[in-house]
Amino acid sequence: MYCPNCGSKRIVTGQRGFSWRNGILGSLFLGDNGFLAGFLGSRDIVCECENCGFEWKVEDKK
Image (cartoon, rainbow, N blue to C red):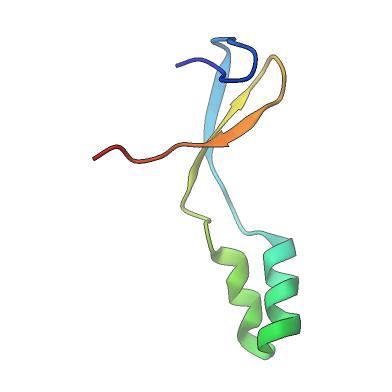
């Protein structure tokens, strides 16, 4: 695996967590339980290049 931005092979993978931005926006638009929108996408696996800092989501290939 290599960075699509700079071509480096120094890649770190991890799982995306709770998004405060989505939680706050969800609360504004959906009311009291709208903060649950912060968990949308929290199971996504993301890769980050240690060389340039570029971040991308890993897609399932079926």
